[in-house]
Image 1 (cartoon, rainbow, N blue to C red):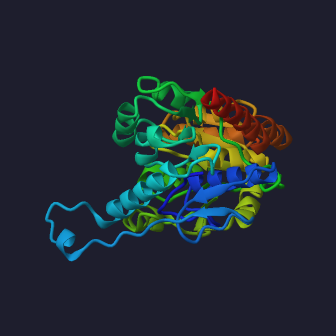
Image 2: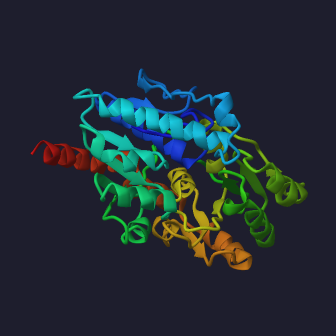
Length: 349
């Protein structure tokens, strides 16, 4: 399984992609598969896992003098993935299948040099780097999109099978609910937690924010001035504490400013029985349905405030049951396993 070379797969997770990789790898291991993971140093999946080392790059003095040199982080990631792909190209029958869960272009572009099939999950809307890689590889490999919205978005470049992401209902347990609202995720402009604050206050509810601050300037400009008696920041929480916070909230608020590929935080909240009020962007329109929450037009804070109050009327048992049946980890793993078998069989034939 190829993950991020930048963020370790361990709690507290840097984002939804890391949380998804963690749950997916653990479930495959639980089902008896032998799993090796390529991820940033410091990853901890909680079970003995084969590790594919991230190769470090240290530019020479001559390279550092290049005035047109790419940023250091770009070069570090390029070197890590290039080293990995060259190592896998010589892996023989060591692996039956590669699951590309990264956002980097090289695992796609170099698919054809590998002796084993590759299943790439498209976790983002179309971006130039990945489009270019798909074009160079001639569409080689098997592709999965995490929502019907992403399948449509990528249809001009590649044909993809839709498999909704899944959350572990044993880790995201039902909670008692409460009166306040909760927002969780990366505190960055494209997630717009400041709009969640404004909408929650407009609806008359308190709001608790949780997640990593990955844009300090944005946090200082838009979030810190809004904190006060009715708005609090709980920090970057481990999953168990985050689940308790979400489960003890009346509503989870989701406010993307882009076409959300899936909306993992929405599925996590629903697994806790907590209904969701969200902007109708991308995959969220498939995740948040009438029994589980309410949708509002993107960036319409007043409509989101109304959605918060509407979502609070949803039956928590119904929300939880829907999440387990439709967005459960077991359902997702079943679909991926079937795809893996078909992919390996077709490659052998």
